[in-house]
Image (tube, rainbow, N blue to C red):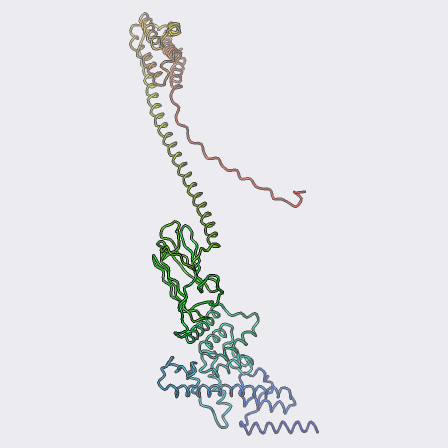
Length: 573
């Protein structure tokens, strides 16, 4: 009997659904109603009938619930449309000549200050008759998917409620197949749009949706935009509360500190420095900074009083390099860059004391410490630069001296080599001339005289005279060449700084005499090698006193690359 009653009820429901919306062809019973985003309300009803007829009661109930939810969503969208049209009509009647804010959507400002629009979705005509469901689906398809596209707060509220119920999603994969923007960025953007249009209920709904997201936190841009809306409204209310009788001018208390290059001001929105803070911030602030003056004016947000500062400074400042900003609660701060570094005797040009001005001792100590540290760093940098400059100058002077000395040595070496070359050439000329008898060794005769001579120059002259006399006794034809060779050797010794060295002079003459004796023998083929050695010895002897050639600068030592042994776990044991 119970089963029969269920069958009768299903048949009755199917009959009523056919009467209300028209019967359709049998639906596929394998379709899942919870995921039937592409089916309309009529198809869902017919599918429920088929499921009930097969005894699949739970699935039939799901189909009916889906159909009811979809119809509810459609009714909400239609209600929002109706409310938008009604609000727009009221706003138009109140202000027939109100200009359009947006000509595309026809947005105007309503009587309550909110923005009402008549966008494309607002032109939908409510459906009637048996085609109600199909027309409702068509109407809901043009419903706004973002708050910025809503024409009224009612439509925005309907969108928020659909999002809360999960009836729409970004991809349209919700049970009813509706698509809307549900990302955090789009919802936050909708919150700002609702706040700007004064749709506070819709804004609260969006905040509730956002708080339901995991680890949600509004962005700094969004918070700043909402704060600007709040502050703007607060400033307008403060001005509305203010009257001419209430407004008074308060000369702000000032604390100041100075460094070598700047002056620092801390201005308090109160007449006394020890007064409690009653004004946290100001509106309509006006700040003027020029070379000689600093002025400030602003209206207290918590109290309708005007707070001012007007200072004629003790010295000139660089206005472009000076800055200001709101400081801690109830203060504004200035950093004034001095035109010329130095200390100011006072803050203002006037010598009259100001009762609500005093030194900012806490900041003064900090500034003095910073200036001291800066001066220390600058002094160290200057000292380092001076030392580097001094070292560079000394190095340049040393290099210059070395260059001069090297040039002088090079010139002396060239002159000495030239003298040595002349002496060797004179010896070659002597040896190349034909002779009959060998010349005796003149060095032995002159050595005793040189040792007994009181003056070295005189002994050299005596030696030359004696050598000349002895040479004339043996070979008068070689006398001029022999004298020339002796004179060249003496000149070469004087060029190398050994002209007063009697030993060197005697040895040179001995080498000349030895070479001449070897060249004058009757057996030149036997003395040829000894003669060559004598000439080489003579040249080497004279060149031994020549200034040495400049040495090449030593190469920079190469850094040895030693591989560090990696420490092992057992190395420290």
